[in-house]
Image 1 (cartoon, rainbow, N blue to C red):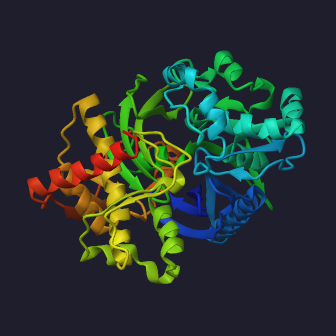
Image 2 (image 1 turned 30 degrees about the horizontal axis):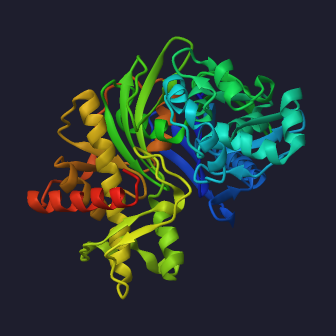
Length: 479
């Protein structure tokens, strides 16, 4: 009798689409598919998506993976879900009926509610490791329950749940209303050190515990997914940037990596002790019942999404944007601060407009180049804080994601004065989930890079560019 071949199913639910992967036990991708979805912008600073469409996409993709596995005689050993983290919503606990759109991590309509709690900002950051911002759960909950009394009473009675879209998806796939710790960190209700919903934090945002999903480690028994005649356990739920770091460096303390997708992230594995520093986020990297590792992270709200935004501003069709090509032979003395999505690390400013200085009005590519450089400047600001906090001197920094294009990585190498490597393997986020599912996350692995970018910019030019960026931040009263 032939022994069944083992496989692992991974869902990667992102801002602009959902991907599914079937890995074999050696980490090879056997099959993958993607479904795109759109974001709606009903008003300034309002960005949302339809959670039912996203859920249906997840179910359809799971069915495709399960069918492929069956046809090729693979057993799906377990499944994992990685997802965008600060996208929150309301849904009914028993029926699963959605009671709001999925309010994107890019959305800042709850700025007023965040500003109201400013006197508690330091307390919130100390407890959660996460800054008070309209992008996170607490202010979003306040904003929507003030506008809709039914949402308020429903969460108080425990009939309606408020949580990240990952919890909604996992709930509808398994029947269990669970949320993992790495994404729960984005709620502003989660005590990072004690790993529980904190009563003081809940009181700040008038959030009843009855309206929250149950907490689970990232690696836990979330229940079974049943598709047609197949059933397999959902064993991992984790934030997308956490999974990306694990996909590049495993769970090795002291590892540093970068990931550039719709948003960007600079990540450092802080090991087994939580700790934070001004401007950065501290959160759970990964956990099970026996261990918990923590992450220091700086996030950049506008990476690939920045170029979608510039397509609208410049009236450039998406197929013609090709931002990396536009930037390659373009220099700029201009500065662009992407206020449309707010600034995350290390400034935490929302509800502002785009800021442009010295941009050539007759040159679209000048603005595109300045936009690309804004990603580099924000990354450099984050890296400077991390390097001072943990005193690291990396020989090379791995970078992954669809936004990790050569022109950006070269600019980063110039600003940081550190070589950057573009990782050979695509979809490191999904690969990180595979490593957790297969028990290989703690194994040492050399990150293979197909391109290395070494510093080339003159020191005086680098200092001049950074000084221009800092000056623009000060003029805008961001710094």
